[in-house]
Length: 126
Image: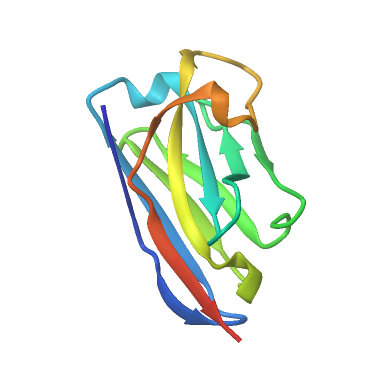
């Protein structure tokens, strides 16, 4: 299983970015997916998750209304559209695949996710 995150970079406050996560080595369309982030000196935190069919999505309160998670099962790719970025969004962003198949409820818990991408750095300057 491989998860390859990309799309990070240095932007200014108020800008937008789209992160991608290319999945391979497993049946992407059968598993819920999520984005987490980890800022320097802080614990990894949940950002957003989406169900295996894409019909259910959930975002953390800190990003609700600004970030949108989506997936393209035909392309085995997960996305995170980020708008109105703030300096506090600065972090390494990780994509992750749920350890369970065909689960209807998305999880915000890191323990629910078995496979992780290498992370992509997002830096938002003020």
